[in-house]
Image 1 (cartoon, rainbow, N blue to C red):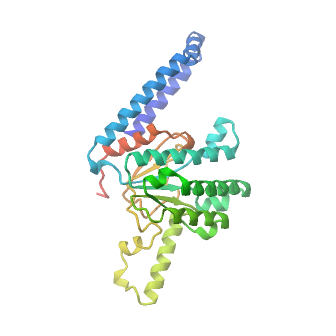
Image 2 (tube, one colour):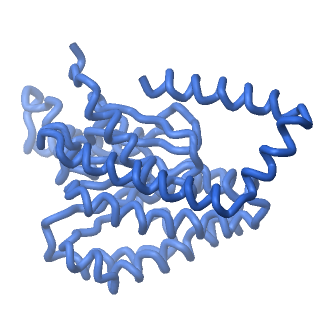
Image 3 (cartoon, one colour):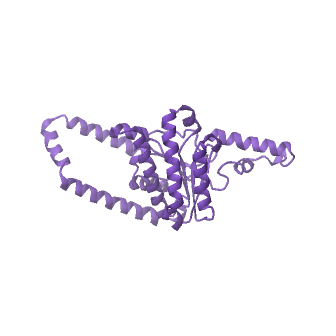
Length: 296
């Protein structure tokens, strides 16, 4: 349904671009598009549609609301290129967008939110100056968490998972501060994947199992899916119900490979800093209309 809707939207966009080549259509269209009245009407209608969509998904049966949403926050750099701003400004905009998404998720009372912030591949492939910018943003964001009333009022526990030893000391110290400041909470769990890779996570779990087997703590017959799941970085949270990826890419990019075996996937065309409350609601609405099959 989502892909069909996106395909129809692209066809309409292409038709509109073709019509705008003609002056008799382009001139009045430009005047209407730039009219403050038009923008006021469109903005008001969009807010109304968004609120109605929120009411619809909140009124659905409780078992249709995802308990755990995971997000691949893609498109900060492409957002910056499209907006003709510096790359670092795109990353900063992405950080601010995450704060808004957290607010929307808490409003829906979704208990678990997991975000993919930095992959092990990013650490290997990104330029040093870009990584330094990202690291500074992580430190700032984690320190903001320590003082954010939204986090404390909603009793959100924050955890960072991944190969943390690959991160600079200043980032690891900020992680420790954020986790310590929220360690006593258990109403919601916000998980940030930093220096993370799904394959690496499974490798670390297998190494743990091998060590336990070698020491006699784990018999060969006891090695089953639960034994692996309990040794993953995310052992303390349920598998994601819904995975959302922004920026139009339709792949999972080494994210929670074990955990998303039965998750529903949703791909949004918008870049992460442009991801709106309506986009989130549309993803959840689409999820609620699906029939989860769990491999059948």
